[in-house]
Length: 239
Image (cartoon, rainbow, N blue to C red):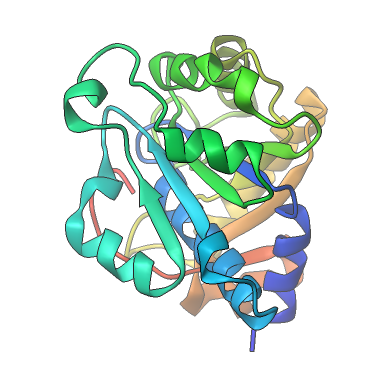
């Protein structure tokens, strides 16, 4: 059964299109993958047709983690279809948006975007802005305060403003995903949350939830509010 805390996160991600951006090491890909899987699980319970599977779109041109064949096959089994720009286009400045994604954005189908959190990645997202359904998308900025240039509220604010300007989209939510990989403790997560909340107050952007390894979900849930328990699919340095 999906835990209550996860149901609360699903309420925040109820927009038909959920966009996750964040700098290298933020863990935004892991967050995007997990949200896509939870949404697919929810749709399966509601007996939604397989043709309406959740789409996970890889717009991270720097670290195209989702190009992993093993991961894509695993996600397909869970009701998540991964779409990447063709390899030769992904190596260019602005990959063409696959027709399947355009169709999904135009139809009533859930889409999760994994976007590079630097200026380049956000600019790519901005090029697709005309296709985003008005009022149906939510833009999340994922923060790991243990990464360089993310340790203070001011640094987080500067990064958020850079991404928003490049994408020409307002960031709707912050996500606390503070971690040290396998060495993460509840204290590390909560210390990060304090900084993210400070940034939230300064920016006027709410904290959507805290993403945390499933083993720590119970330990931080009482303090962190909404919690997304994470399954770590592949341990790579940029996740």
